[in-house]
Amino acid sequence: MTGRPHEIEIWFALEGETLYMLSDSHGSDWVKNLRRTPEVTLRISGETLDGRARVVDDEREDELARRLLVEKYEPGYGSLSDWRRTALPVAVDLSARS
Image (cartoon, rainbow, N blue to C red; front, side, top):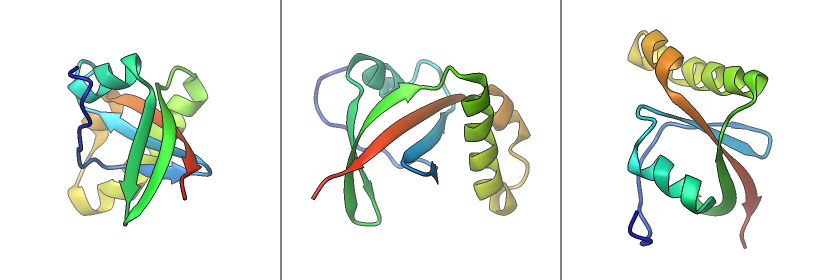
């Protein structure tokens, strides 16, 4: 947690104005960073978006995040059942930046 911007590539899925990701590690640096400073900037297909990140703690939203990611990526990557079960769901509530 250096306080400096970091850029990662990660699988994601969108549902309305919320972007969901699954972290392989509950203690990954990017998860530690968002817990400390939840304001984030994302770049998707050349578009820059601001948002507020959070670890998902609602049971229904947890299942939604897991389902969305697996449905999006499993067809091309084989079984993701272990990842679906063990990963930490993270959400970013988005707001577009001009």
